[in-house]
Length: 284
Image (cartoon, rainbow, N blue to C red):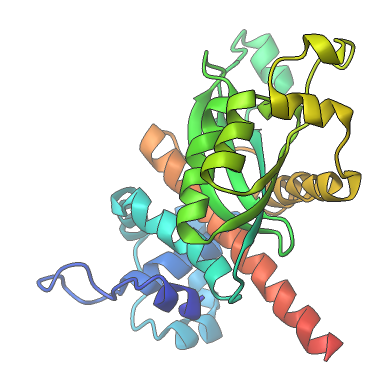
């Protein structure tokens, strides 16, 4: 995690006049560990009392109050968290990205379905996380968070994710499911990003001569199943995030919910990068 923060060029302190009791690095690592432990702020600071070796490793002279972590999580900029997420893939020293895009929803509350039914509090709104990830290493590169359901379709998030991903590293291949089927998406990837796109066309029953778009017709005529099935790793990434860190959010405001999801993505990337290092060590 220290190497990632150094790669992202995160400063130790944002202001020269801060009290310098805790560094930004310490705060970020503690908030990432909180996602691992799946504890509230109060319970996490109580848990730090017993985590003696962790405090020594982070060089914590004092245990932060739980409100200190809460205020830092609400105060840290989204651009800073996005920079940290994208820095994981830069540690691997690869030249191009094999991008897959997918989205999933997170509940805004931990209330059971039985309670919401009896109390007539059926909640239809949820938080949607759209992520572009590298399919070879299964690391998240860029995320986009919004409220759902809305009139905005998933395909609206496609081009912003591709633009931000291409700014980090050049893209070689992009794969998505049928939910992102659009001739504009094909044109954008192939003619502007100069990459190869595999997005299966919807409505398979419609004949080829009635299908709109040159690239959508190519998809109906056939595409590489081996490359397309790499998209299944997107489902694996979303599943691991929910199994490790939960499928509901504990934060209440929109701003803190976005930060919590960002910290979960950082925690997942750290989990995945650690596993990759262990695999390399055993293979060699």
